[in-house]
Amino acid sequence: MDVSKWPLDEIMQLPDHAFGRRWIVSVGRSGLSNNILYDISEAGLPERFVVWEIMWCGDGEILFVVSMALGLSDYLPTTDVEFWAFPRLISDLGIDINGNRMLFIRSEQSWRRMTLRQPVASGGRRLVGRFAETATKTAAAMIAITISSLPREVPDWLISGRREFRG
Image (cartoon, rainbow, N blue to C red; front, side, top):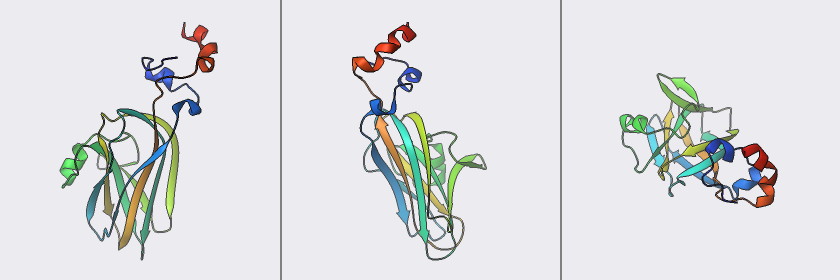
């Protein structure tokens, strides 16, 4: 059955296995050393997709704290003004610092993971990461997201009981 014209809230009620194959998209930088660096994913994201998981990690020689943020764009920014003008991957993700939301990783944490089921409209743009060290020397930092496309068709048997519900 074609579900491509269904409202997003109804598509999100489908079971997880209806969303098909999942894949990982990541951004990361090495050699931060008190710099702000940016990275952009190699491939563009689907027009609309679901984020199932976000993982972020950092690795350093001594104590470190790295702030990270994710945006959507077609190009790699060169300044924070450019980056913060990009739409966010998920608008309320992270801790609000001076009006900008960021994820953090400290030296005593090797990696962090958040599971979710969040639909995102990317407009076909790419994932852009911002990495800023806020302490001593960091060797590398990375953010990876697990995504899948929204289903366009599902087997009839999957929704046969929903017909009465949909009206």
